[in-house]
Length: 400
Ligand SMILES: [Zn+2]
Image (tube, rainbow, N blue to C red; front, side, top):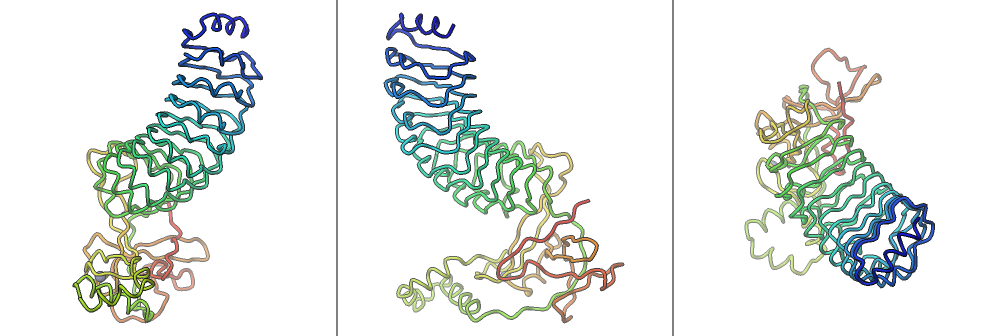
């Protein structure tokens, strides 16, 4: 059957534009394809092909190649010769790597589907796919995505559902044309600050991750659809507690002084810092306090502000307030915050753990551990600020 179709195609010679051999139990790609230099579309879906034939490299007019549901183990190197290719379907194979050079010639590729494979990583060379607009790698084993992926400036839709991603690179902000982002069922804890620069993002689905809090500015995204079910989002359940002002390291005090002097254009320091690249490197990691606007280096209070989601967003049913991450430089600023900002603390109990939002610390009370006012006794639980450390660690969230 497959042979008969192929013979008919071969009779057409270079006038044959389409060859469809779906579901023909083919185990070897027909090498006679090289006699069809005018071929535009090649469908070989649902076969048993483990390797592409070298002759495929002659198909320089090919715009669409479907090798979905076969037995390929890599994105083949021969792809680099298919310089006219616009659509490449490689879903449902056993692909665990990109052959070297595979991305080199695919300058015109618009759509790449790699769903249901075994990829654990994507090579940085993916950045060579300059025209890529739709990329979908659902149901793979990706633990990370390379920052180079964020340089695909035409990318409009990115699907990474059902992988093992734990973070998203800060460079995501460079995907200025991204409209749809799907990250369902990964292990993502934090969305980077740069996320808020995705000005064209309209659909975001992050259901089934471990996100507690969103970057500040998230509420300004012009989303139309936003889904976030099954994330341990912080909930507004204030607990009153107290906390003593900590003692800063000398490096923190000095860095704050230098950063704030530089912000005020202190000429002497501006010139001096030129001579100390190490200092420049350290202070480049400084961040700004949401209350006083001054810079700090490594010691801060992580707080949460609850804002209602935009009325234009189509959202998850049970989402009433979006928790946003707010960084504050000191308890002095903490005590000047507005009524919607809360400190985040970690309550450790013998029975269960939950994160709490600290509403009103009383001044002057000592102790690293602070008791929440309420029914819980000291024996049952300790309220410990988990987020005012030099290395912030995630609080354990409490869900109803
Ligand atoms: Zn401050």
